[in-house]
Length: 114
Length: 112
Image (cartoon, rainbow over all chains, first blue to last red; front, top):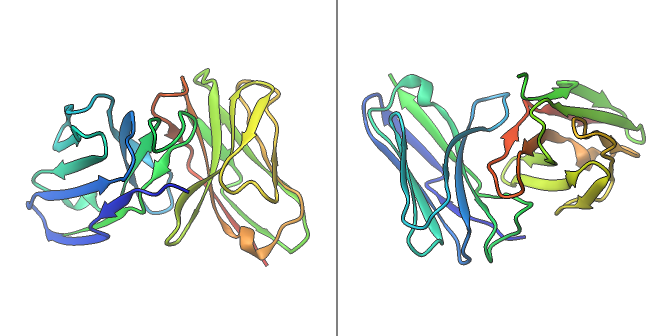
């Protein structure tokens, strides 16, 4: 099935640094979502984006819906140890998928060194 | 609200056994779905439901059955467990079809 290309696969950073990760697709999506998953837990929604060009913040997190609708990025500013986890992008709707099914990237594993 | 709940949290089965993974939500969401998560494969959709009495197949439906008799519950049945079904299973729900989906805590299943 359709896959999103999420990069980087993993990141190892120092506490206080900023982080950036992104997702790209060959198809367009109507909605972009960013989730975080802690070990042994389900994905938790961080940010939802509904319009091309939209820039949305949630605390230290900022995400943008690419103007072409084929990409999205997530930035984390001033990282802290509890930011550790796997971050997933997901697309919904558009030519890239259906309105019923989230298409997921394979995740970015973030490690923060205190 | 409890959100999306799943039981059991862990389960070990022998090949050929059957079982049901439970999923419930108390948010009056119409849409519910089941995903499996495997290393290097990300999350893949098994089955989904757009409302009580309506279900459909996702990407990887073989070996699984679902039903949706109520808005709140969406159980996933493994008919005859196989080692290839060893995975972590997540249930998710959303208010509308095009809304963000909320996930349960997962069921970690091992089939020996």
